[in-house]
Length: 107
Image 1: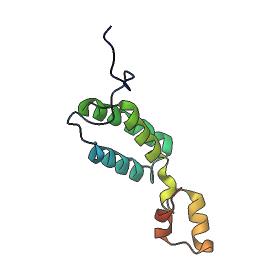
Image 2: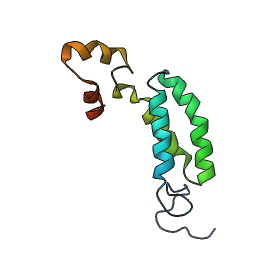
Image 3: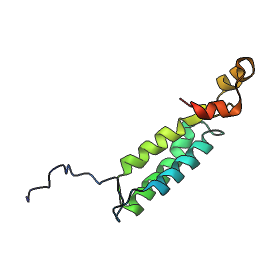
Image 4: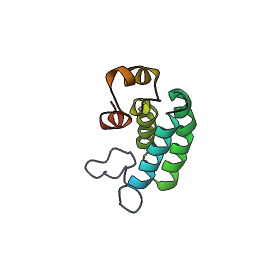
Protein backbone atom coordinates (compact mmCIF):
# COMPACT_ATOMS: atom_id res chain seq x y z
CA UNK A 1 0.00 0.00 0.00
CA UNK A 2 1.52 3.36 -0.98
CA UNK A 3 2.02 5.90 1.79
CA UNK A 4 -0.71 8.51 2.15
CA UNK A 5 0.00 12.21 2.29
CA UNK A 6 0.11 13.70 5.75
CA UNK A 7 -3.34 14.69 7.01
CA UNK A 8 -5.19 12.35 4.62
CA UNK A 9 -7.56 10.03 6.44
CA UNK A 10 -9.41 8.45 3.53
CA UNK A 11 -12.25 10.98 3.54
CA UNK A 12 -13.34 13.23 0.74
CA UNK A 13 -12.49 16.90 1.27
CA UNK A 14 -15.21 19.48 1.68
CA UNK A 15 -13.77 21.49 -1.21
CA UNK A 16 -15.11 20.72 -4.64
CA UNK A 17 -13.35 19.31 -7.69
CA UNK A 18 -12.12 22.71 -8.82
CA UNK A 19 -10.48 23.43 -5.48
CA UNK A 20 -12.91 26.18 -4.56
CA UNK A 21 -15.17 26.25 -1.55
CA UNK A 22 -18.69 25.10 -2.43
CA UNK A 23 -20.48 27.98 -0.73
CA UNK A 24 -23.21 28.43 -3.36
CA UNK A 25 -24.69 24.92 -3.22
CA UNK A 26 -24.22 24.79 0.56
CA UNK A 27 -25.93 28.16 1.04
CA UNK A 28 -28.74 27.17 -1.32
CA UNK A 29 -29.30 23.88 0.45
CA UNK A 30 -29.30 25.64 3.83
CA UNK A 31 -31.77 28.31 2.71
CA UNK A 32 -34.21 25.88 1.12
CA UNK A 33 -34.08 23.61 4.16
CA UNK A 34 -34.43 26.46 6.67
CA UNK A 35 -37.40 27.96 4.82
CA UNK A 36 -39.08 24.56 4.55
CA UNK A 37 -38.52 24.02 8.28
CA UNK A 38 -40.71 27.03 9.03
CA UNK A 39 -43.82 25.28 7.74
CA UNK A 40 -42.97 21.56 7.83
CA UNK A 41 -41.97 19.60 10.97
CA UNK A 42 -38.22 19.25 11.56
CA UNK A 43 -37.95 15.49 11.11
CA UNK A 44 -39.95 15.58 7.89
CA UNK A 45 -37.73 18.33 6.44
CA UNK A 46 -34.60 16.38 7.33
CA UNK A 47 -35.96 13.22 5.68
CA UNK A 48 -37.06 15.19 2.63
CA UNK A 49 -33.77 17.04 2.13
CA UNK A 50 -31.30 14.26 3.01
CA UNK A 51 -31.48 12.50 -0.39
CA UNK A 52 -31.07 15.85 -2.14
CA UNK A 53 -27.99 16.59 -0.04
CA UNK A 54 -26.49 13.16 -0.77
CA UNK A 55 -27.06 13.51 -4.52
CA UNK A 56 -25.61 17.01 -4.51
CA UNK A 57 -22.52 15.83 -2.65
CA UNK A 58 -22.04 12.96 -5.09
CA UNK A 59 -22.49 15.23 -8.12
CA UNK A 60 -20.08 17.87 -6.84
CA UNK A 61 -17.55 15.39 -5.51
CA UNK A 62 -17.27 16.33 -1.87
CA UNK A 63 -18.11 14.82 1.48
CA UNK A 64 -21.70 13.67 1.98
CA UNK A 65 -21.31 14.13 5.74
CA UNK A 66 -20.73 17.85 5.33
CA UNK A 67 -23.98 18.39 3.45
CA UNK A 68 -25.73 16.09 5.90
CA UNK A 69 -24.70 18.46 8.68
CA UNK A 70 -25.99 21.41 6.66
CA UNK A 71 -29.39 19.70 6.41
CA UNK A 72 -29.36 18.82 10.13
CA UNK A 73 -28.55 22.37 11.22
CA UNK A 74 -30.91 24.03 8.78
CA UNK A 75 -33.82 21.76 9.61
CA UNK A 76 -33.48 22.74 13.26
CA UNK A 77 -33.66 26.44 12.37
CA UNK A 78 -37.33 26.77 13.28
CA UNK A 79 -36.47 29.30 15.96
CA UNK A 80 -35.40 31.86 13.34
CA UNK A 81 -38.90 33.30 13.05
CA UNK A 82 -41.87 33.80 15.34
CA UNK A 83 -44.08 31.58 13.19
CA UNK A 84 -41.72 28.59 13.22
CA UNK A 85 -42.45 27.50 16.77
CA UNK A 86 -45.46 28.09 19.05
CA UNK A 87 -43.28 29.29 21.94
CA UNK A 88 -41.90 32.09 19.77
CA UNK A 89 -45.41 33.20 18.87
CA UNK A 90 -46.52 33.17 22.51
CA UNK A 91 -43.70 35.42 23.75
CA UNK A 92 -43.67 37.80 20.78
CA UNK A 93 -46.50 40.06 21.98
CA UNK A 94 -45.84 40.20 25.74
CA UNK A 95 -42.08 40.43 25.26
CA UNK A 96 -42.29 43.28 22.78
CA UNK A 97 -40.29 41.39 20.17
CA UNK A 98 -40.39 42.29 16.51
CA UNK A 99 -39.96 39.91 13.58
CA UNK A 100 -36.38 41.07 12.97
CA UNK A 101 -35.36 40.32 16.56
CA UNK A 102 -35.57 36.59 15.82
CA UNK A 103 -33.11 36.91 12.95
CA UNK A 104 -30.54 38.75 15.10
CA UNK A 105 -30.06 35.96 17.64
CA UNK A 106 -31.74 32.81 16.29
CA UNK A 107 -30.25 30.27 18.70
